[in-house]
Amino acid sequence: MKAASQTILVHEISKLQTKEAQWDPFAWYQEMRENNPVFYDAEQDVWNVFLYDHAKRVLFDHALFSNKKERSLIPTPREDNRANVNFVDPPEHRNRRALLAKAFTPRNLKEWEPRIHMIVDELIAEMEGRDTVDIVQELAIPLPVTVIAELLGAPTKDRHQIKSWSDILFMPYAKDTYSDVVAEKAQAMKEFHEYLLPIVKEKRKHPADDILSDLTKAELDGERLNDEEVVLSGIGLLGAGNETTTMLISNMFYSMLVDKPGVYQELRSDQSLVPKLTEEVLRFRFPAAMDRKVAQDTDVFGPEMKQGQVVVAWVGAANRDEAQFAHGEEFDIHRPGNQRHLTFGAGPHFCLGAPLARMEANIALTSFVKRFADIGLVENFEVTEHLIDSAIGQSLESFPIRLEQG
Ligand code: HEM
Image 1 (cartoon, helix red, strand yellow):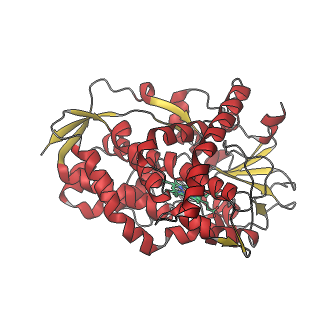
Image 2: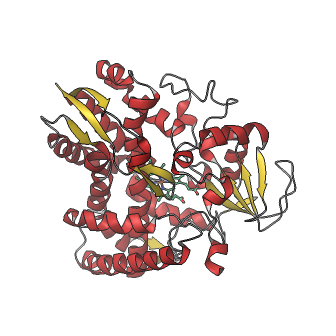
Image 3: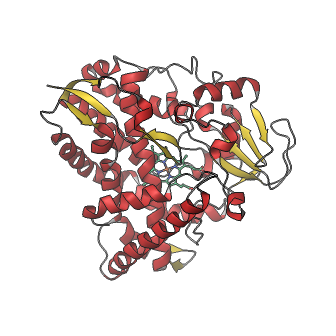
């Protein structure tokens, strides 16, 4: 199985096979931090680190832990090109990143803010007068995909189609369905590509005020990006900004209802606490893991790691490391320093969209809290009936909640 050797199967490392266990990997994380913090998975020839300092070192130290990897946990098809920021290290990475970074300046974010408010207001208006809503389907999914489609300059009316391609591209691989998933992804990539190409060509002729137009004008090492490169950058951004932000917003509601009942009322009386809740959810409830290739033989973490092997930084575990976060297994929006979580990565590849994701989450929750007096779990709610396997672990596919108007 050639392709399987390029893709590292995350559940095969953890051996967490049930939905329940994958949704709640935190006990396994704790066990690994305490008993096996530098763990070698011989089946896939992959090192795994679970402590905060180790994970941070993996992400920062690109000389030792490179992004030029032949194998990866990332389940999207590898479409390497000149503008790809993923599979490259500094110094090459710097110019590619600068190209995209232009889109995410604080000034641009300020300009986008009113539009994000409008999208949120429209979604919340649909919830007026109702007793229950599905917060995933009605807020956490439509908000990020609408925002990113608009910012890129793709027609927002196509957001359902865009979302469905992005879902397929981020589907996880599993041993038993491997070749089906590969074929489905290739088809989605082809369709997505065919959809974006004429849009990009049009932007090149008639640039508008959006990211795709900016990319058609952008130069990399003295040469303009060609249409193909702009298309792939667009697909990359649509992918990067979608599932992740959906997961954040869904988990914010789950945490308010399950991890810390009562916190909603605290936010209701003081909305300036919303960003603190966002950071704590990113720290506490994000089963993220990032990988790198060992660039040279090293024993920085104790055992000898060999050049060419893969190392996975289990960021979701690092985020609960007691050495960094006192009582790390507790959900506490008031703990100082929660924002030091590694959920957006660290070092040269730190998430470019982090300010956008934070802004979307904060605007969505602030507007929601202002509008609704309280929220509650629906009767007989069983989380396992609402999960879907995704690239970043199990995530909520739906989450019906009770609303108290007022
Ligand atoms: C809660 C939401 C998000 C999370 C948890 C997240 C997480 C991450 C992480 C962990 C990385 C680094 C990966 C690595 O080091 O291997 C990353 C990179 C990146 N993210 Fe995000 N992301 C989020 C939202 C977004 C959004 C909204 C966008 C833009 C639309 C975005 C665009 C990017 C880009 C372009 C990179 C590549 C940066 C580079 O390689 O230099 N992300 N993200």
